[in-house]
Length: 124
Image (cartoon, rainbow, N blue to C red):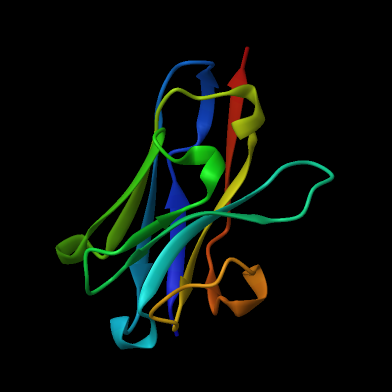
């Protein structure tokens, strides 16, 4: 069983930066990809970014390209989401997830494991 623990959320200002972390425990053979989703109040959970656990591949949703960077530290079994040039519309609960697909889909239903979520609030 894979367990994911997200941290690093909080209050940020528009134009500022925040970095999220997600520590994974359990057999890494159970997943190929780790990623981040977010869910704003009244909206569906949406894909933000993902990174391969074994290659240099990464993926981003269009609205965060050029502002967010996903990275990983295999030795620590941790992924990070560095969020730069924050916007109020980035406000959401951010969830990390792990999936068994080498090329991830953007549908939350396709991911196998989920962390507990961390709140990010961006003030204007």
